[in-house]
Amino acid sequence: MFTGIITDKGVVASVVKNDGGDLHLGIKTAYDLNTVDIGASIACSGCCLTVVEKQGDVFFVDVSAESLSKTTIGNWTEGVIINLERALKMGDELGGHIVSGHVDGLAKLVSFTQEGESWRLVFSIPNNLAQYVAPKGSVSLNGVSLTVNEVSDLDGTTFGVNIIPHTWDNTNLGNLKVGDNLHIEIDMLARYVARIADINKA
Image 1 (cartoon, rainbow, N blue to C red):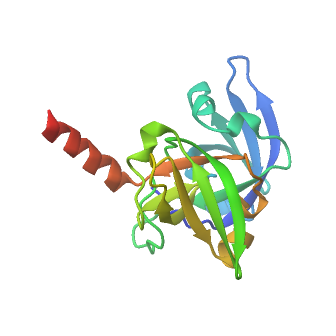
Image 2 (image 1 turned 180 degrees about the vertical axis):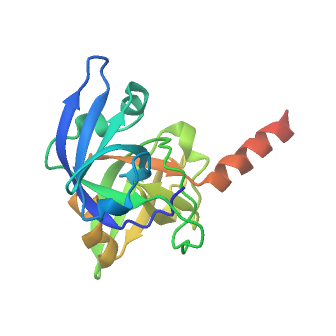
Image 3 (image 1 turned 135 degrees about the vertical axis):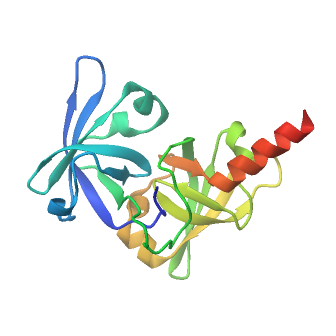
């Protein structure tokens, strides 16, 4: 489990495609890897991946074909900057919201405008995820816990968030261009509330 509070901007150091189509990625990090066990989970731009190897300041993860089909990881190349967050420990501060690291789909950046020192970003999302996004609710984008400012009145498939300077500078959100896709994870609470509502309708 994670909180959506990014603690490092990692850099993809190597990309190797295995015979079965899976990827073996090396990710350079500022983390002290002496404190990271083999088998530990690290959220990589919101996708929970398992550390399978360590060399110096680089940790390695395997990404299955299933994960590649749901994420942008298949497009990562050497030098790509990704958001990193280590898994929660008991007693850690819950600064964002509960994030599982399971990507639900892709959000596309529609526009971004500067408002004072902050940035307003608008995203579009698939129809099947729109019901889970609500004003003042939480959402994870590339692993970053964000508060939804507004949702479009028409079909709910576009929504806006505000990015403060700290988040802009310390995550890869500041590198986005219009048309870019991001990993989106809907709020776990919204998922279960919608499920309960569907059951009650039946």
